[in-house]
Amino acid sequence: MASITLTKHHGLGNDFLIAVSPTVDLGPDHAVRLCDRKRGIGADGLISAARFGEDPSRWSMTLWNADGSRAAVSGNGLRCLGQALVLHHDDGQQAMTFHVRTDAGERRVAVQPNRGSDTDQVAVDMGQARTGPGLSSRWADLGVGIHQQMGVDIGNPHLVAVVDDPAAIDLAVVGPAVEQDYADGINLELIAINSRSEISLRVWERGVGITEACGSGACAAVWACQSLGLVDNRVTVDMPGGMAMVELVDGAVLLSGPATFVAVVEVERRP
Image 1 (cartoon, rainbow, N blue to C red):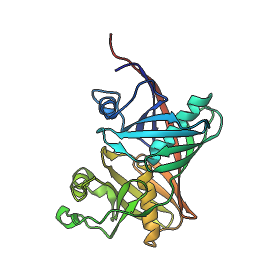
Image 2 (cartoon, one colour):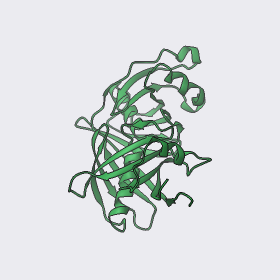
Image 3 (cartoon, rainbow, N blue to C red):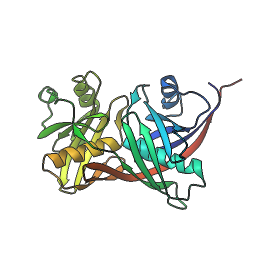
């Protein structure tokens, strides 16, 4: 492996290694190696970003999950990439907006740096959601009681299931079992309705497993709940890693929350 400069960031504990304009062509093997938490640096995913056209605000991103599978989009990944791009452009102190081309289409990312802190606030227009994958039939066999479930497509596939208490469910067992219903895997969100303006969420992410937060999952969950008449259009999503805000505005799903810079990492092959 030739020398690579990476920055590491996390969005509510969902962490990413990011290479901006890397001099090495990154791929799934790099993701598996670098994201390994015992033998590598450790992360939920690896993002490679490159300029898209002449406009300095336009970028493209490629995202690999920790298992090397390619992910179309990630809300937390986009927030972390926004922070990485601000640091790449200047001293990281100026508010900036980027238009990022993902495998799921273009997404708008607005970064508001927090001077003197490693954590910035980042808002992402995640585009439109729509009804997605079919429903799982495994709940009874797993001994899990659900109130409602809905498949959601927000550039990647999600299954949102409303339960009494997400924390009471063994997600390490339920997640992979439910995934067996889907040939391409699924992102599973187990949620509880706390009020019309707040939900609690735990997530099983395809290609990664249990993570502390999922931006696209938060968006999918709020869109599903609003479609089912359970919440309003502005909802706080409480996840194990912290809270994010999701707003539904004129058909668009807007995600806002923190992105935290962790470190600069230089990866070099030994001579």
